[in-house]
Length: 307
Ligand SMILES: [Zn+2]
Picture 1 (cartoon, rainbow, N blue to C red):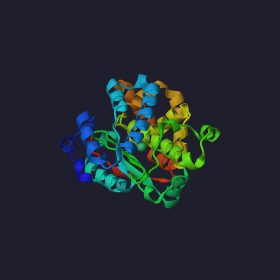
Picture 2: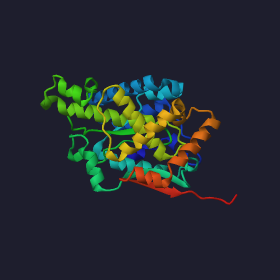
Picture 3: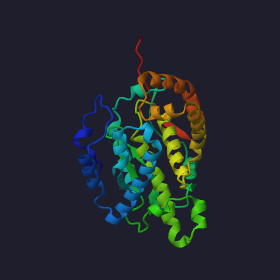
Picture 4: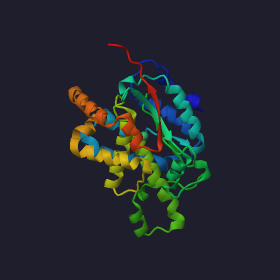
């Protein structure tokens, strides 16, 4: 299945710059991977992608470029079945392992990815929302560095419960509304949970990839939460991320709009470098371990040359 991802644009590994695939390449990928998903199901997920992305553009439009807006506006997410997600992620890791991320080093370390430290941390995550079926292992979106392809698992293709954009709301609104649980609980949970995951992966697609991964992760979680809370939608975070988001909010207050522009790669270089230094002083490897006690980062020491 994964072999099909080897389209022309992904085959130049050395010294590549992250950039967007063309619309026709995205369509080809989507047709390859989503062909087996019933059209109505695919459409219901795509509608969620559009609603959350438009809200993001509305809130962040002064910090992102026209190209980034176009990316956010498009149908960019490749949907895969939960059962296929693990294979897919392994394939992507294999495929992108040679990419040069040395400019995004932090404290002499390149951060390539992360996993949860323990089964307890994983089950913490599974407790986040009640929807918890056997086939949901591999319940995590990913974003490819090159091509900026967000890949987000949908609930099973055998599932007859689809998300519904009118159910993007928080628990209080849901509880106060006229929604019989037996019929609406699952779609409510699927809608908000998938929406948050989809937005998170698309936010990664408009980030500056010269920034170290732990910082990009914190920012993606924080901005995803910002969009969901502002719109009164339900979003819950793994406890492992709460502390990091809290720290990010204090930085955001202090640095203001420059921090948004920094994350989205739209700051003049001199100012970008100042923020690089400021953040690197805060996010040392010890500090990252401390604020993410349940996360194991996949790191690699960068080679240093005597100057
Ligand atoms: Zn992420």
